[in-house]
Image 1 (cartoon, one colour):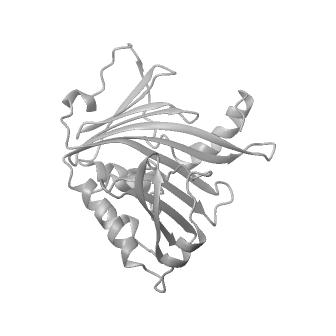
Image 2 (tube, helix red, strand yellow):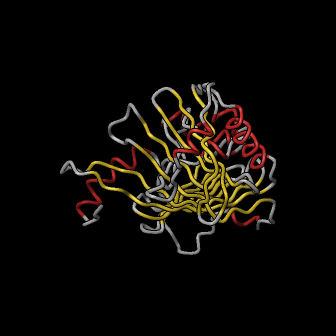
Image 3 (cartoon, helix red, strand yellow):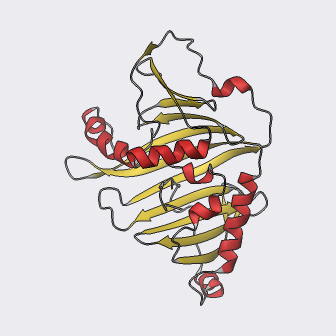
Length: 271
């Protein structure tokens, strides 16, 4: 799931999820790649990729070490709307670079409400190409980018070294399947709705990155195949914003999180 784009975000439990010793014993697997976990992940991937339109919200946290050496948690939330392969809108708020991102199939527009600035540049023809370009050119993209590609399952299982079906758990009133996976240097867990097959929670640990040891996010308010106003993906300059040089659409990149810590601490943000 973290293969290339490292979208992983989750609400990493903090008491939300507990698995009993008996459940662990019951679900212990002998194979490094538990087919039950792979099947659940594939079903989630197919559910998302087959939808004509999708929208969801995320609440995420990322730990960042402040100049004093103390770890602080930076909070953010996003609203995501996608239509087909070539329309995307992302509104991001919170501690990390509040930003509106529009992709209409031809151009990318990035808008900062706090600075009342916007920027536009030509873009590739698809959402997936935009994500690939962001990673190729800058080594970063949206934290949830892996579920916006045409075949999420292929991306999420690329380089997979282990897969484990943990069991059932209730997250926010939704019965989910709790799965755990690992790649080289990365371990992640995901909680997928049993009935709707949509991600509800993700938790990732980066074993080889001491600057950012984990990333968490919660997913909610999923909507699939609902009509979306075409204007959702087109920036309307209703605030008379000034045009500026385009900056990366990776508004929630790992480097952004690290760079934000000193500034936020100076402003009095506390863990």
